[in-house]
Length: 282
Image 1 (cartoon, rainbow, N blue to C red):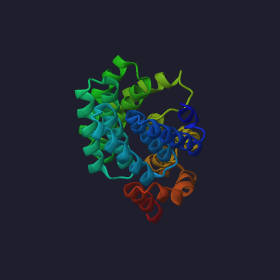
Image 2: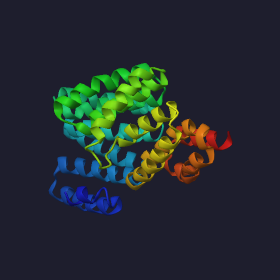
Image 3: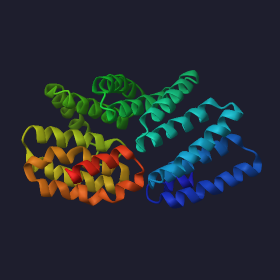
Image 4: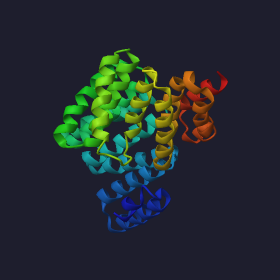
């Protein structure tokens, strides 16, 4: 629990505490504790963009949980491994692991965990450019998030669906999604996982509406807030929105690309790296 409280402000310290917990769990033969400690160590590594280390930790958790017949822990480790593969741009492997997690959670009747797996599957489809498929998954996610009371996921899923509609040039549906998202964000000043999707929708819709100054200001503020929380989210937000802002002020928008161009390679995500290189070379 100490490791979990340290995760956001100091992932490295959190990982040290989880490693201590793992040692204690091994000493007393607590298999469930060992699996959870491996998962938590992987999450801490992922927070610092050490994706290979995170993936190895999640693999160890799967091995431990699978051997002990613990489908809930197995599913949780598979879910996190799927997210790690997604952040590394290995979308087929991400799909496989997220599908595995979804099946395990369904068998264990864990609705909240099923929701998280479904939400991340929608992200993978969106990253692959499968807009209709992704929009359908986001639409399935939203009412489930409402029922369970997961407002972060509800906002992210609504925004993700809006981005898909924007790509499909369904501007009416994108505007409707944005109106709903902004109403929810009005009472959520904090940064949360998935907020980068909501910010991206607002920036890109404003840009599509010709509101260049508003979009650029929102872009700069959102990237700075995202960077304080998570490098991957900030790098994704920058490359997702910058091209839409180039017609208004290319040098100003491009500063955010320059900001992450060197650091994005440490994320070991070939697709994200390709997108950055395309903008720099183009």
